[in-house]
Length: 287
Image (cartoon, rainbow, N blue to C red):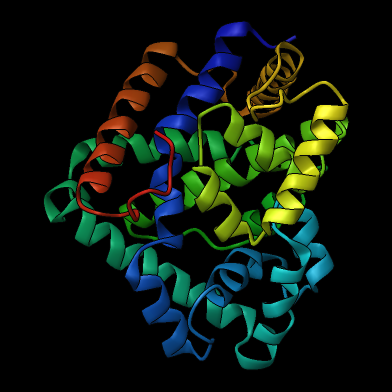
């Protein structure tokens, strides 16, 4: 049984550092590098770059491992991307995106700082303790070579921990019998994550599909007529998040809690810095 403080730590680290990974999907450097590599502008770079660690997989694998995207959107870009650029080239481009974006958003003083090096060491220690069983997207990422530059090792470690957690999150969603769109509807109803218009646009769910998912959730007693979560729906989302933290906790066993506290504080400060520097578009996230 994993200690409750360790379980809580897994969630806290994720929330403090996730933006430091996900900024690569929003910064302008992404489209620049992926188009230069040979991909089409727009969403193709996202799907190709995140799935490339698994090789030239088909749309079914991407839909399964990304979970809450409309399969029609995935099929627009995968496998077409692999006819244009090899996965290895996409991964090289993604690392350039991370390098350029982090240097721009954090600045060279942070990049060269002792604090970043210490955080990288702790994150690397945790990432290397993750196990691949049942974690398809993480497994693909875990087979990649570690970058040598500290800021890229930091980004790679955050990415590994994020995908490890994400694979566990899918386990919790499947157990809760929530489809991809239902997972998205219930998460936005918590008031966290994407705003509803952004969620629909980024995951390409039509108003009709979103409405049908809402009706199904109302029939299960999870969603109220006004679109908010019922007590049962709130309890379900809380159980999903708790299970996700539990499944992400193992890499943090035995790690000093004060060191984790310091990492969380530092991750939050870096996240605030990149948000203030414009890493994400306005009106995307609820908070």
